Image 1 (cartoon, rainbow, N blue to C red):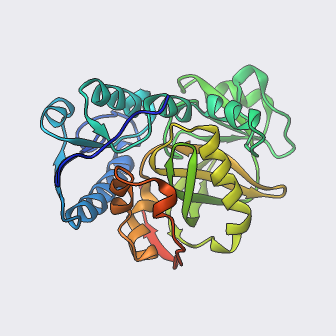
Image 2: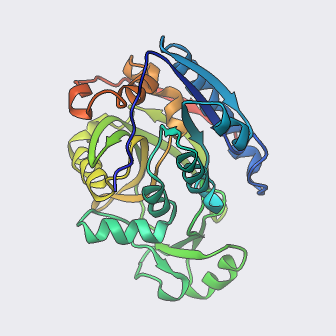
Length: 313
């Protein structure tokens, strides 16, 4: 069921709430997550501050934020259900949520549920299975938590007997075949099953030992693949019609073409370079969805490459 969102009056007080820098997520990679969170906060507050009818305030605590706003824009990972919980609490407080519906967040937060939904809809997606049902692979496997954000907890495994060892430290681990290829992401505006693909991004992901390290992205750096990526963006939005506002889609462009790795139902680190790449305020596009259908907003864009650097942990 689509959540109703509307804007009344001439102004709106928007609370942007950032989970990690507010003390959430006591994890080993919390420093890296906090750095990316701070970058996203800075970019979002800049963009909201340039919208004339918006008063934007940054909050670090959830309850006070919900008590004093017209609209709520969460910046939170899917880890431990943080984004889903914040979304449900905001809807229960009858606030406009400038993000995806809670049910869509719940599916996108689970790599296994995401893969199942996309596969059922005929969308190319990397197979994702429980630990005891590893998919076939000639290149090894990747073990990661079913609900997690970032690359820090993912491990490459070359032998089946190593799976249990690496999975032992993870909550609800899943296994994917290791797919060699180019990491990409899509920055998308979604509404009611429709998608506007803003930019096709090249991700910088290094292999470090048996794991991965995310170094940033080149927003607009994969526009040469737009023709094959656009149908995927549209299909993902149709498969999860509760996606709304800014959505990130991570893919691997491998030997068989692009395959979806995960859906991020929120702004992502690539958002930091999106305005410079597009020459358009992306937060303004999201708030405009409160007054107009996506089809009325969509127009040709010419993304230019903009690098977003993430400091090494």
